[in-house]
Length: 290
Image: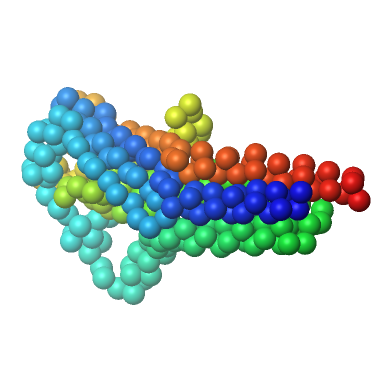
């Protein structure tokens, strides 16, 4: 029976390697301009995440109004943003750095940190399986079970949240503004517009579960000063115009959804359970016989 237990735990360790090498998540990001642009242009991005890299494909539906928007607006970043203050003093640099850190806690490396953490946890799980095979004990079995659960938690929650953070959506709450006014949904295009070019900008994020996986949402509204003549910008900055008033045509509204669906890693990871349960059953029978 000891041989059967070792074989089962050995196969479980092999499945850990297979799970690590398989695709982790398939992520679909869909962002739509719901206010200000004709025909509601939509940016769709498909991401595939594994243990080494992220690959993506991007497409734009109703692209013409969006391309015209990018072409017609003026880039006013050099003007110092909506405040109109063009000062480049140390305090401005410190504020920009603080905002960057607040909106990007991992400096764009959250996914790399998640990969490293999962690699260490999986190695720990394999080590506990080896200990359980060589020196069977309740402590070793419990350690292996806990390691499996911790790895599962990181796979289910840590990896997609790291991907969302690198995407830019998790740093998009009001008061912690990201670089992009769309929360990262246009980051793979050539027309990304930064938040500091908007007046009265507001955004909110949300998350939840669906039948397809984890869902992250992002909504924003603001008046794009790049769409206005320079002489008209200050009036919009001072007071948000209402519908029908001058400057209201610069209002831009955006809604985005990022859905992280499970990849093959989940199937391989759960296949470990029957092998581990079988090894525990054999171990229990061996204890009873002794």
